[in-house]
Image (cartoon, rainbow, N blue to C red; front, side, top):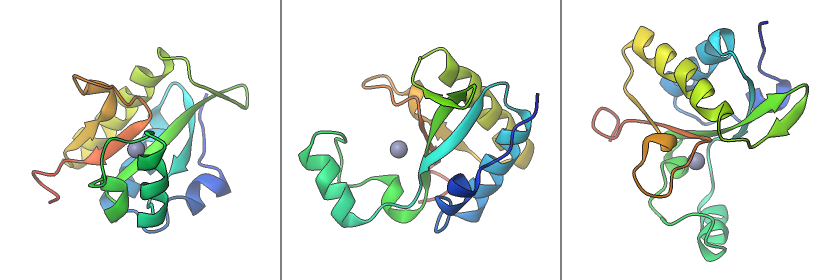
Length: 127
Ligand SMILES: [Zn+2]
């Protein structure tokens, strides 16, 4: 089974760093779980709204600079938030990142408040 990025997913990659876009485009080719892009570049206004709602802990988000994307797992055309799907998507992202030599961070690897849908370019290489 191979998957493709939808038009909506592609539209949400506008303004995202090209190295991260390349990883998303490769990940969709090799993933065992379909996914859509739910968010890429985020405005300060939206970040403030999310912060106020406690949906994010930071005003220093990588989304503000186009260094992060969020995805949602899709099963049979439906968005699913079941945790086991996300390490499988992350596997595809990590494989794509390895192939390109682009260091990325998966939010699911964070020690506190894991963020399974979130991927970002490593600050060490992409300040
Ligand atoms: Zn995110």
